[in-house]
Amino acid sequence: MLFRSGTNTLTAVFTPADTTNYFNVTNTVSLVVNPAALTITANSRTNECGQTLVLNGTNFTASGLAGTDSVTSVTLTNVGSSVLVSSAVGSGLANDSITYVAGVLTTVDTTPPVITVLGSNPLTNTYNNPFVDPGATALDACVGSVPVITNSPVGTYAIMPALVDASSRLANYNVTTNNGTLTVLAATPVVVWTNPASIIYGVCWGQAS
Image (cartoon, rainbow, N blue to C red):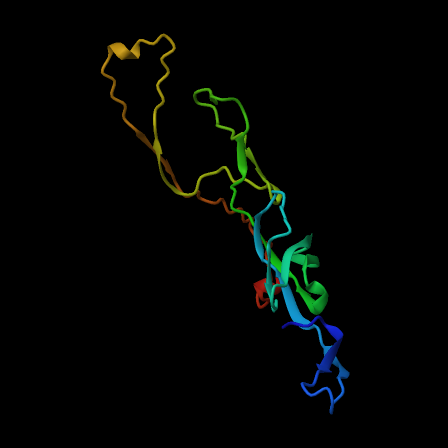
């Protein structure tokens, strides 16, 4: 038998079989039942940056429930990197001393930024004119705008031709395409160093400069 927390009155009644020589006796005692320790912990969560965090009242773990006591829902709130839990609802919880433990919210950024190439498409360049890269922009849902480097590192890159068949006549031919290769060479820096001023014999050049 489970008694509720608090002070419970227990009554003992003695009813003798021999009522001639014995009286009925009733006696009461007080039984103090301390609240049981109940710990309710919010489940830790992982959420994609930029997306709405959905918290329902069932993402928790209860430890220490006795008998038929139960927790059906709690209130979950997000504060910074924590998921706070409070206001448990259930049955028999008046018999418990509840400790609430916050969960951890981990924010991840697994969605790549959206990159937009600036300039016209297709991009054209006049023969024998220097090519000017129009650049690009990148927008990330988590951190916003991020820098974009459009120049290619030193190395080789495949150039793949794209056929344009506005009149739909390529079906009449057996077309073979050959990829080209773009080689990006290391740049040769230009070092500009003017002649230093003359110095007097015996004077260290570093001191004079």
